[in-house]
Length: 292
View 1 (cartoon, rainbow, N blue to C red):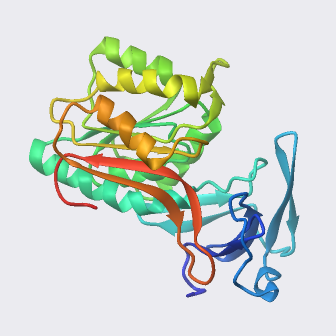
View 2 (view 1 turned 180 degrees about the horizontal axis):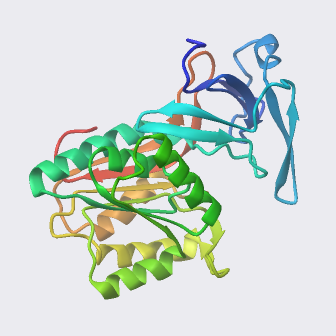
View 3 (view 1 turned 135 degrees about the vertical axis):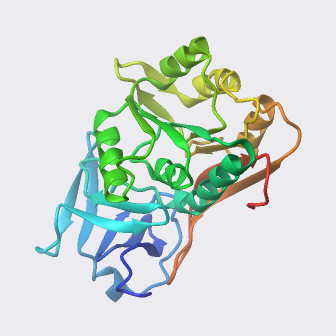
């Protein structure tokens, strides 16, 4: 691996852990799905700057071995720049399994604009905004929505760092289900929809989200927000029983067009040195172009 690269790289995984190079810093975090033996020797794992030790009541503890490691630092990603930090919940601010799709999103939004003159994108459960950055880089007008105000603030910081401070992005803190229902009433429509729903979550006013109960009705409502020139939809999940084929079944139920292409696959974080890491399910639908 090029140690000078200021990017994210999975180095290895195993023993329910993952070894990550995140810009200049090497981290060890939990990966319950990594039930195999690591391929890299222990000496490589011992070089970690910080290790995520345990979870207690939803919070985590980090062991810092490099006193010079900052609380926050930036890395380069396909759409721009994202800020990393060791959060109290073990997150860094990036889901690296999504990086593969950011390049597709940037191109599909460009093609949508070339065909239809515009591209309005709705990004739900949008977290720190990697997909928002990719869509905005492609020229889209983006509605970025998450129920967490700190996550939306973090996403705006990423947009500013990526030179997208003046991009047409609406930053919204709201409950996804309530916002989508209001958008239906307002008659707004979108050319592209992105969503990566959690297994369980809470809205801005403690509204509950359970993927088993709430995903299907949400998708039925999203069908009403699809523009007549609807171009793409990306649905991801990290929940038990929500396999790639299950996600494709959901999309086929709500996308009116029988044409287009589906990229239906297990999300994988590729490793440069050791074991690749499966990290959820994905189904990406596009009506035009050949992206897959």
